[in-house]
Length: 360
Ligand code: ATP
Image 1: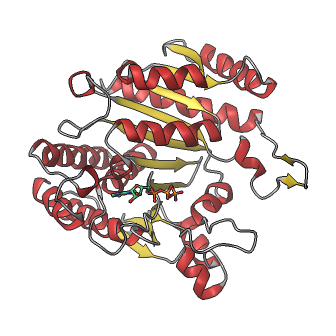
Image 2 (image 1 turned 90 degrees about the horizontal axis):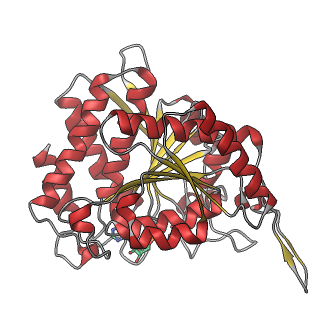
């Protein structure tokens, strides 16, 4: 925080619909600023495929430095399928930031907002309010760029470390406790793995069990990832917080986003011990970019998650209130019947942004 107590936010719009959904999120934060005692200083910076095209780098050192110094990082979406490194992989500064700042806890909440259609029968009555915590710096992704491919075989190595797992589990137990304290849920935590087949996951589960002993007040369970997937589509309302390895979390968090209406509804955060990046779960959606069709809800809810994290970190009660105000405003907009084009409705980015601002 700077001398005048303004929260310094690094703003990386990125590519495709990234800047299109970022603009409404910043408008929402400016409205919060005008109606609370919170102050923000936004600094915009380049990152992504377009920057790579112009300079040959995914992001400049100045962007990394800004992210290091800022109180929090807001990111739209980065990368375009048509822009690739010589080895054919996409430009992904958002993934680089996870490794650079050791953002091990990928938090992917999935809450079904009343009025939003879910593909799950009964979800509108029973509700869905769960969180996937995806370890974000190791697991199978530790092998990124290091895989070995020959004419006859390919190998990638999965990594689980004690150092990261212990911090990940502490974070997860704490989140489960905070959710229960807020009356948001049962406060339960499930370890999702494949401990029956792989030693690495048995090790992961063993460390989870050790952490569980340190948090006897949190109800815990353990599920294999395959069984967990089936249960998630059958009874998503039975789930609260789940913690898992990177690749499992990559897949299950897209699935849980599907349960609550779609990618445009799913916010996320990548959190470390000091830094955190807040961005929607979705990508740059090149198929709809530049057409005013993008749903900015996930980006707006990611900004709300940022306020909640800042509140917890700096003891800022008004930031907790601001987070809840944004969530209530979004709920009101959907209860009043807004229908994003994403669900076959007629409301584009500008309509949704305007409605949320009015509800605030
Ligand atoms: P990435 O690999 O970067 O996650 P992706 O191509 O897998 O990208 P998205 O860019 O998220 O996935 O797009 C998947 C689909 O969801 C596309 O059809 C896209 O139009 C749609 N989509 C994603 N985000 C939104 C949004 N905010 N509003 C409306 N539709 C969206």
